[in-house]
Length: 116
Length: 114
Image (cartoon, rainbow over all chains, first blue to last red; front, side):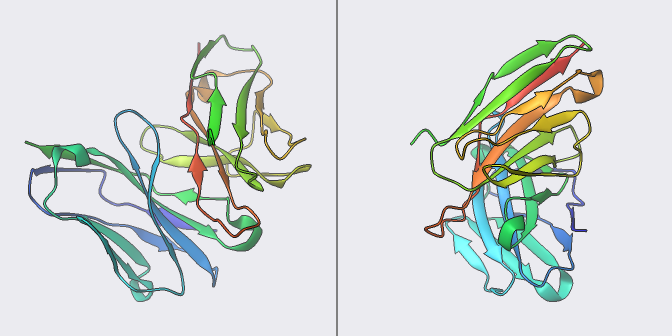
């Protein structure tokens, strides 16, 4: 069975600091997908990124970057120059391909608080 | 497109009452799922469907029933509510035959069972 671990329960930073959210996963699937979602205080789930298992290229999108390393089963998320609006709960998730694509396994979430 | 819609947004039930949480999507997605979110536990899969007439259990299916008679709708039924079912429920959909794999989530239903 798949498992996703986000060891950091809460992180508190001051605005403009860089912050990295860790995500470690366990899977026996040869093809799988990894995701990051943001849940702001309003409660909705906002999709940030999807990565498939055969694409280990790091990705940067504005202040966000992701580091996917299959060798360590990690998919870490870095926010550069954090802002108060980044305060939210962040979830890492995994699913297998094919007909299991809709069956996401989530980590416990990391609460990020960015102080002005 | 309205995306994924869920009704109601909030609901209070008494122990033993039944109710149905509604979920609908207008993106012609094949896959639909129900999750519950509890503090400190992330989201956990309750039930799952890969198409009309096909459903499967997830990690925490006990106390919940589903059916999928149409592509658009995937209601979640609580037959006899228990306080342990107090949670926030999210419906999600994904995958159309054009190869769009993005996962879309509804806004959630906050359920309290007293």
